[in-house]
Image (tube, rainbow, N blue to C red; front, top):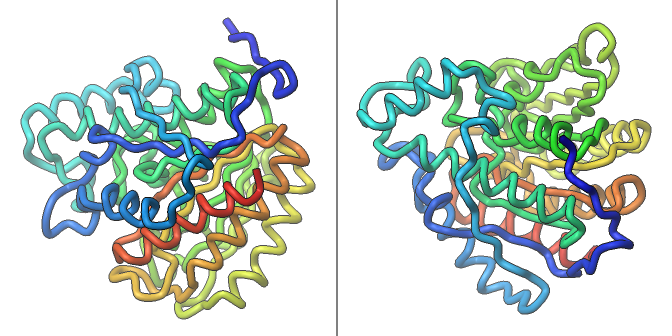
Length: 328
């Protein structure tokens, strides 16, 4: 059953930006010396506090996702595997990137729940813009973990929008240094998932996918845009690529926009080789807000994604929030 969807004119909408925080999503990580540590949440929120956006921000607090919500994207066998291994606290969820730590099921469920909370708030007309820092786990496939990602909150949210609110055309844009393969292959043949991804060329970086020739299959051919960049690509290279992203999204006229804002595309990340500044993230966020206002009644959610240089992620994600504030 579809929930009643208020239009922005029907609702009393806040003009603040909704930003999520809380111990439950901060707990998502794999401990030292793994690059995806649990300090990333607090590093970002400390930088956000210094930026002092005052009453322009409202803080949201996540809830755990339900099993039925996880199953919108993931297989039952995989969900059970994560739950079982999480209780044990040992082993691997993939071939060596994503270790099991005790409680990872609860933390990953909270990440999904935060994104679904943001979807609910926006679709009920309470906000136009939301940011979830510990989310954007774009490598997880329907039946497996991958690349530090346990549950694919992005893919689940797309399916949730369709099931609960009856939306059809959803745009997913990814500026993480790594290709968003879990989302791409999860919807490769789906013509209604609009996909655009600027990333480091897969010949040089995990997961090795995202060639420009990968544009979707079957009825979805042409709905997917992959733009691989060479190691060392800077802001000028980003801007040259971005014009194609913007034109692609414009032509597809989405009803909702997700953007994965991985900060590992900034210069100085310890595991990637792109050389953007945080200006790239600010410009992308501002442009997508304009597109959201034009096509989506303003509806846009950004997720933090990757980023393993703490200063970089704090600054890049804060600039995304700043762009959301400035384009309200």
